Length: 213
Length: 314
View 1 (cartoon, rainbow over the protein chains, first blue to last red):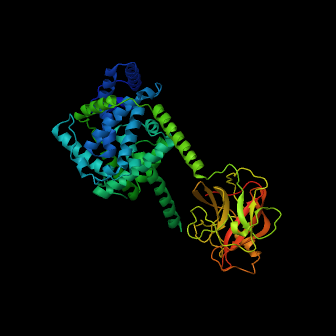
View 2 (view 1 turned 45 degrees about the horizontal axis):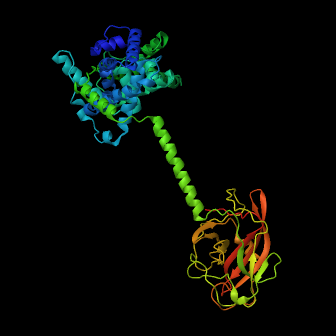
């Protein structure tokens, strides 16, 4: 997991730590929580809330619903942490819950009713960049989210994990509980789907960099 | 010819390259494969355009800035956790036990209902009927034709039997007892003869008995010879079941009575030949009696078996 780079990108608590150290830290926090230390879970929440929210928002595209589902994800983790196998990665387990909950939410008629997703581009939370960059990124986020919502959910989740969460194909296969080959195929199709929807939405705005023979 | 072959080869190569373009754009191909794709897109306008589109949209996708979770998320999570902790503890195991107990009670209740309803008789009772012959398998109970305890109720088949005061000139009252009375066993084994459609209740025939419990089989529509209803009556309750017995074979050789009384309802009961009814792998001897109404149509059929009464309740 490229947790270091992702942590830098979103300014998470654990910036600069190596993945193995992150896993050790997660397992330590899980152990402390299971031993009765409630503050350990607060630390886990603070550490992963942005990750989970990005996954859920990427799949749902609606801020309010995403916030609700993200809270539900952490409640689920809170309730079922006793069943967590200590040898496995906490982050993978958490992301799997987040993806499943978000995908389940897309299936509900309540969430389907607010298609199309124009609202999804309206409420982009602030980041720590300069105003110009924030504007560009908001625009970019809005564009991407708009296209993402036209991609089928089975491809949307893998794109979110790959491009929002920066997970490797091995980590994606663990989160989605599939083989690496299946994850590769799914990602390939997801990219093609995204490109197709992107072109449908914005046309083929590509400048030829050099004359062709 | 050469140009055509070259074009075909290029098309095939384009297809392969386009398949690999997403991985190429993302830098996920090996060196050799990447060099092959790069060499192709430098000379192929279509694949080059495809590559630029992919770079553009995937670059946009990659450039998306992560967003921070809303500040209200923590409060919402805390509220949900508090609600969860306030709720009474319900473990999945306890719920599973409760569900199992509910299912058990349901099964017991249904079983008791079925037993009380008369669907299941512990023993085949004797059949009291009118017969017209000196069949050696029947025991004569009363030779007085004015005291029949078996009759036909044309109006209400569900009611208790009434006494038919009109004597049948040649009939004698007899009690047919099962030669080997055994419990009626519900047998789900597929029969060789199956009634295709569901029997319906009819008023044109019924069976009466002095006993509160009896088993008889009657024809709903004697002319069509399609349905036989096995009716069990017990303490006033009635259940209708379909007997896996096809009347048509017996009807084909059924003798027609020469003299039919003019009174309504069944006026004549004729014992028929014995048949063998194949039930699964076993064979049951079946003795059939047919009652005719005033029009000479079949209105009543009674069946007596030599052992288990092979009926398929439905």
